[in-house]
Length: 254
Image (cartoon, rainbow, N blue to C red; front, side, top):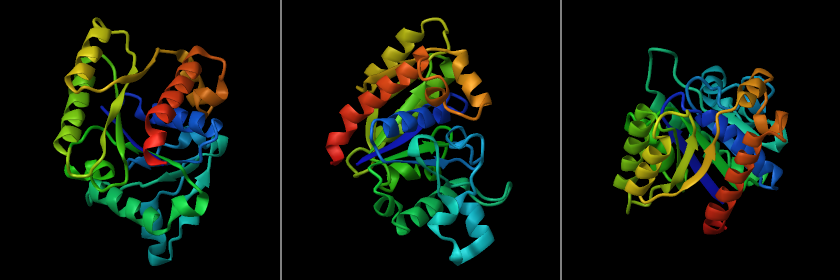
């Protein structure tokens, strides 16, 4: 089974990468579950035609112990199964603990077994600012970490922090570094900065996404670019990323 946690600086395009990767993997025959691990609960919107899901934590607040997996799971574009962890009421509680509670709920509901899931993608909020947001990589939910970055200074800084956290977990049975995805911003020395980052952590660059207005055009339609504009160059780059993910990670868990 592929179990991949996707991290990166806030606003770097993690959700875009995650949703398009999920769609492409599903198109290639994988049974995909995408779990948004962000209090905003907006990771799966592009797979759901712009519709937000009831998050697990919202469901817990509304239904308590009667909450069932079917209350918070919906099928999105390409057959991707979608879920959102959600978060606490703003200003109250810890979002990291909320992520842990939501993932444990989905695990107890045996979602992967019930739906025959062979690929789980975790779209995780920001970089690792506290132990709570490292839950997907620390508690055995994910096997590998994929970091989205550009050549911008703050994106590279955040990516290095995340990669350092993964390195610190080495030997504990936690998720290991899987590689980088470059979401280009066309800044000076972008290739050099990203290649240096990858070399520092002995991890591959699995894909490079060019800047494309097609991505924003698709999002305005409430769709992924790979669904809305499958013949666009950037859609081809996402399919290449899906191929790289299947080649690199599928055999390890199956």
